Length: 159
Image 1: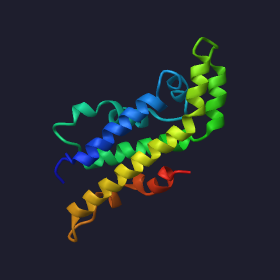
Image 2 (image 1 turned 180 degrees about the horizontal axis):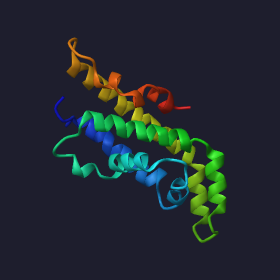
Image 3 (image 1 turned 180 degrees about the vertical axis):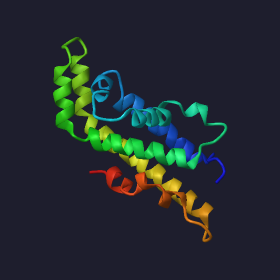
């Protein structure tokens, strides 16, 4: 498959990155999120998807890389949905003048995860359609060959 330059996918990537930086990994929540049990490779994939889009915007995106990045974000969402873990880690942070803002960010965290999950699900669906079209009837779509995508629908399901 040629590199993906689809305007719909690029718009979704921009929305995902903006939402993630503003509402999920903001200055109030980032110290807590970095304590979650997530491996470095997953964090790196999330970072590329949410923060380094400009590197790929003009040359296009590789489908397999986008699939891996979406899967990494889905794993992050799965871990981050455990609100009690995040709340206990927030309570361990030193009190400061940001305490009220930190609590506000935490109280909106679940709904912001749902928005992120919805955006990722929309993008994943768009990628699947492109993948199926590109494969046609002669070959298997790429997503069927990537084990990390097998339960992605369950991970991205909005609760």
